Image (cartoon, rainbow, N blue to C red; front, side, top):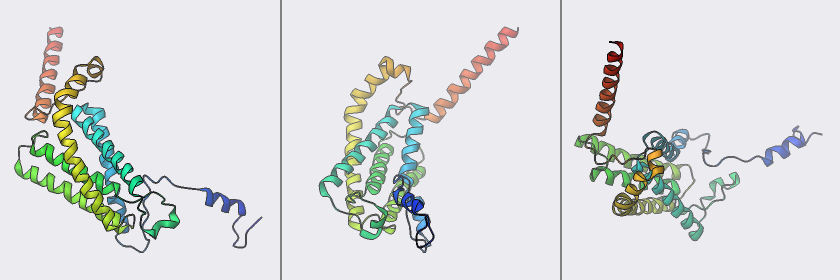
Length: 238
């Protein structure tokens, strides 16, 4: 049985029943020449979260785990604020079933939380970068990315300017707060407990933030280990 426009009725029902995964779906106007660029930019927080999880898996640094915990803390605060304030998003995408609240912008909050936390880690030498120019470039880059993501949320009509500004300032405050938590609670009390616990030792948890040059340290440890192995093999051959 066909409808008046030639589409099978069953196919119409299927189309109206379909939905989408909101986490990675980004809509933009097809006549917007900058829409696709902003669509990619607005996905940067997801890339950062995946990067942090990858570092946790391969490096087992408790500080990286603390960063991920901080991101979860920020997102939880954002959820609570949205449910409390209950301010709607712009009506532009209403037909796309974007039903969640928009105040504050979670993307803007995420990016400025991450930027502030990383900045404080760099300035307080928890992330050790000797070259001042590289330090400055990284810090500036973090805030440029944060501003780009915040702008993309307004450009794509997912948030109002007010929602993005509120989210940005919330991220700045929470990022500074989480740094204080890491340095005054997690680092002196929680990190040593988990590092020295049998479970921590099983998963090789560590905190290498006090090592002056981690890349150099890891490099020479690998070289020395390889040298010892080669010497041992040579002795066996003799």
